[in-house]
Length: 477
Image (cartoon, rainbow, N blue to C red; front, top):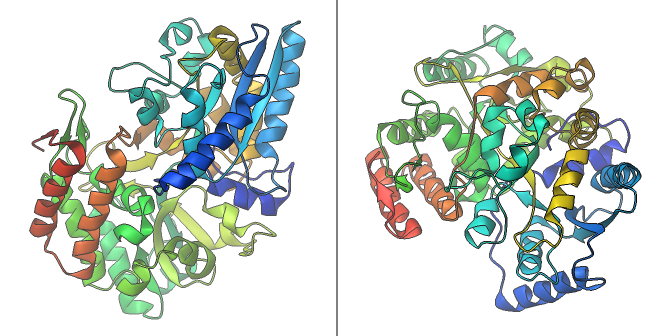
């Protein structure tokens, strides 16, 4: 579920609605707060708890903004369809109104008992493996093997909810992708082509250097970095570089054969070197700004709309910040900005890189009506319903038939570009240790950004942090 232009609701709401779908790590909660959330979670499911063979209970994340009803409205429509198609069966929607971190906590509390577990739950791919490892979710492979529409899903998207055991625990309902946004006006001033498509990392750096020389009053290139940017630094920054190194045949972060995390290899060091170059040569924002916790808002709300940033390595959702009523209205963005795929390091196949996140629908291990729950997934994921959802929720399609539909492809400028990246995208190895691994990556980036660490030292420090984060479950690069 990622952005496109939503016609059926307020555009201001659409902008805010998008933010909750960006995968990010949740801050730890105090024991007192966790207990309070647990009580809230249990009460959310408390009325009518237990299994009713004719009712499927669907738990989902509801926006904390009362003006945003996209998920509610969509599920209400599917509920009506389902009940009509299945006489005698009922759907009970269980919204959980909470920020991401609180939602995760509440869901985990609900999943622990058959009295409170829903039949269907909305899971963030960033943390789904924690629930899988805890035994909270059931594999869907027996259902997927008999579901003809599963063949419509793009292969790379299917890996979003595939666990270390090789089984699939969720059906994705959309994703996001990442690429290079660039200011056409700045490019013209710098003597660069407005149909720019870099082939290598050197091409990206060359363009940034040209901008610095010829348009000195703007920031040439933004690459998110350091701990203040959080998962944006890891995903939009480092992983967009790292997954473009090597030959692309293996995951440079995680070895799925040995089920161990990889220590820093040459690709890891090359990615750090790219970040170091950006900030050492002052091609990026001032370091103080780059390490501002609000850097994402600064980029989307100030630098790009005001023509102060040449190139931004960022995500498909940016236009939602520029819609009327968003606070950063920018009606001409599609005329002012160009889009280019992030290239691989040396132009090696497949030539471009993207990283994706997303959410999935999963069936809890303690669900009372798993068969009925999967039938509800099938209802949600008809081609027509999937298309309506992607458009309404500003999502990037993970179904090939919807991605090829002209009504979807024309829903917003740039949507086809970002959808085409799904075929070659990468999903993070979001296993239980990943949030700590991500923090270690951010620390390594921050070291080379500030100049406090050389590439070699930052890589060594990462290896030590990796061992601590994973219980020494590491292997060579």
